[in-house]
Image: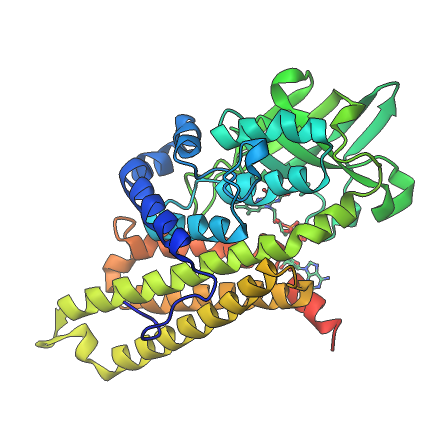
Length: 385
Ligand SMILES: Cc1cc2nc3c(=O)[nH]c(=O)nc-3n(C[C@H](O)[C@H](O)[C@H](O)COP(=O)(O)OP(=O)(O)OC[C@H]3O[C@@H](n4cnc5c(N)ncnc54)[C@H](O)[C@@H]3O)c2cc1C
């Protein structure tokens, strides 16, 4: 169903439409049939990464010289959208390709890019970003993990939690203090290749209310030694700036995912309420259903147009952090509201996991929390008042 008659995202090109159709087929054929099993086992199969690599889904927006697809961030958005449409929320590609690969491409030395990006593009390596700790999430300056320079090594000590891809990642970008006395200016990003070190331990694959196929986990670092050449970039203390620079595009990906979820919720609910009968009518014949779904469709359309505007700005290198924060909080807020409204029209079936709307409901809730909570987004916007 079109949310706006004849509307096409202004960043969509013919080439991207071809990608869209092939990624849609890939997710439908290769991932969707395993979705339920992956949800039960708490992670995607490891070889899902290799299959995605072969299909060109990993690192699509990374330069070809580093094994990537040579596309723009629009490629990443198309891929994220199709994953949402297929309902395979647990596959942590947005973190792998949309975040970590971009950190490496943007800040890494030539040697680092050549070492890690090609393996990420094939799925030989799975990547994670480890910022959050049990004691600090929103207030990242409070990170307590340390990376102490000893000779030509960093010795990392600390604990991380809620880390996407935590069980499968073999390349982890760790946010650590190289100078604990210097606050934000003492924060650095250090890459840990988990197969190469001792003292690294994975904790629990956390039991979440949604995104069950995602192996969000605890990680422990006890005297983990990595070469100083694993510092991302060449200068210590740049971690905070590096994190901040990437935030607009990370938040845009979340907004894009929210748009797809809203559109899908309206579609599946319109279809269901047309079929389901009560009091001799379709549920959609009740004016309450019509009005609520009309509101949902309108909001989904507004979300899409605003997100598309952000996407155009991003592709032109002009998406500012405040506008990205607006997109992130508003679209995810609306996603949760719309999915909740839609679920209601399924009655008891909406509470059953075999109905996609139920999974969309449990998957949606995290969107208001990760990528910077929606309260933090409003704080950023309020600073510009
Ligand atoms: C499924 C999942 C995946 C995740 N993936 C990753 C990942 O890959 N890597 C990673 O590093 N982290 C990840 N996270 C962590 C996520 O980014 C954090 O949970 C989030 O940033 C919030 O931090 P917190 O949980 O410590 O909450 P807190 O910071 O403790 O916040 C608690 C509440 O207080 C509010 N609050 C905090 N400060 C303020 C303020 N100044 N003004 C008003 N309200 C405030 C918050 O908005 C929130 O509502 C993930 C989390 C989940 C659940």
